[in-house]
Every structure is written in structure tokens, then in C-alpha cells.
Length: 75
Image (cartoon, rainbow, N blue to C red; front, side, top):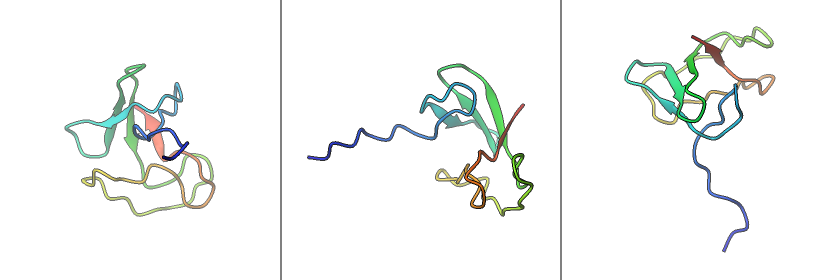
């Protein structure tokens, strides 16, 4: 058995809990722990690097490939 805990989902940029879930609107997420809402953007708010995003994918990457920061902005 693995000693690694199960991955519950992406971590919320606000509270850090792994309860970030997609909403019915493409590119929008809500943390079911702190209830904050976020939008997936194509330009990283941390470093300004542009990234192509797939809004309809359930496995959408929410981390910048360049600086490893969050590609989510509060709504």
C-alpha cells in the first residue's frame, strides 16, 4: 500500500484545502470548503505567462507551467 494520501482534487488558492470543484459554467470553480469562487484565466496572474486552457476538461490544469502559480483568479 502507498503511504501517499489520496488526492481529493485541486487545492483552493484561498484556503489551501483540496476541495476545488468545477461549476456548471466552463472555466469557473468553487471551493466547497470556504465557498469562494474562481475563474480559470489564460494569463498567469503571478508571472504574466500565457497558457492555452481547456475549459471543458474535468482534468483542467490550474497551475502555471512556468512559475507553478495558480491560474485561478477570484470572481
